[in-house]
Image (cartoon, rainbow, N blue to C red; front, side, top):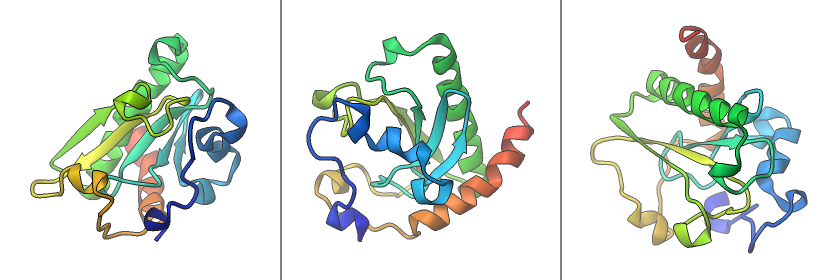
Length: 163
């Protein structure tokens, strides 16, 4: 119902960190903010408007719009968290593949263009394509809080096996 009602969906361009949901989420407790894991300079959060169950976003803490403006440390943290996110989703949900990507700028499809975020979207054979998202129709078989709980619980074990 959150998806249908557009609750918490930002309106217009978010130029400042004061209005940015990606700046706000890390200040909340993990369950409320849908945060799955926290790194040194970036964190992993469930997409409030997912394309598929387990759709994660890897987000730098710093309010930065362009990938080329990331510090070397932020770049590494975003990459490592993206890799671990894929491993965790594989362990929890066994997807057949993934879509990974960043939409740079509103014209490229970024819903929140002012704060960079990497999408980690699990895919299964026969799942819906992106057309239902454009058409604003999507059936999701699991509540976001349930998905966040399962992924967050698996994160430490999966992350530890890769060190």
